[in-house]
Image (spheres, rainbow, N blue to C red):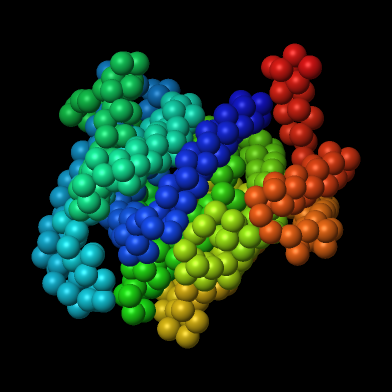
Length: 499
């Protein structure tokens, strides 16, 4: 567990540093006199569409790596190991099919569905290199997790990608990159660059081997691999569509869709701060969970389940409270365009969704690495069946807040089903009495801080308001010992700082 904790902490620090860069990018995108809302919305559409491309093209290869890596590692020498060969070749071929479909149905997709977003039509072809780079990178990321290199992959995705974006924004702002046209065309190749970095790293560590000789492990598990990849691929596709459909439906349904998507993207990006620990914990947990299922170590799986839940719940409720305390003040204090105030209500519901998703722990990874991964597909279908029509209906009725409310409803039901499944099947559930104490503590600290400072505005009050909340919540969490990892983490920090 200490290895998971160490990797989770280091990854979380990296993710938060990346989010700091992301906040800088968000500010540069949304401040007065900079990029337009449509420019910001276009970058979010690149990410949304690229994620769908990955889900289609990947053919379930990340799940294949996460589930079967221990078997390939145990029974094959590095030179005989053909896992990475198929994990790279099949998604590349899959992407070629995706690109062919995208070109064939361009008129239907852009001219008919997104006809109120002319910028998307102008840069339609540039989404393909962005999607290809993301596809290759995410397959390699799964391989990096199994090689216990989650810190490296998180650094590339969370820090380096945003740093390169910052450089592009600054160069565009000062006029070295002459116009947005050049910006978006360079931006389209960033993930290809990151994938190349991972490939070079694995080659230098002699962990990147290609062989077209089908190994005995592949032959032995062929049917199970095909079944796993088929179900997980379909489940991942519907889950991804449900996750990014909000941005797509805003762009397609509302007038000036890309500008509204830009406002919604601000709410999403700010809410992503709440999820930072989740990314580190997930990437550090997948390998040990896969090994624990292989060894039938159910006690370890349940321990990871409960600790991931309380640790993520602590982070999420605290971060949500901090952001909600300062949201409106931040828009005015940092000189963002007033149109971005519309993101406030959307953030509230997105933030609650993040808390529910994180508070239920690594349930997706537990199910995905078990023999019940077919359930992943079934719950994905349920999520899609709820989210898609609800997104469309509420977007037409409520505008930018509609997709946020829709996702809160859909993901609450989705995680509730997973909770019931793991509890009935294995007697595992992530909550303890301290889960309730965590929520009550956050609510009390929020209310006291709000009463003290809700009439004040300005940078100094944002700092003071945040500091008071952190002190109240931090002292309460320590006195109640809400997480078993609090003492080891504090002791480790004190040791490193020689306190």
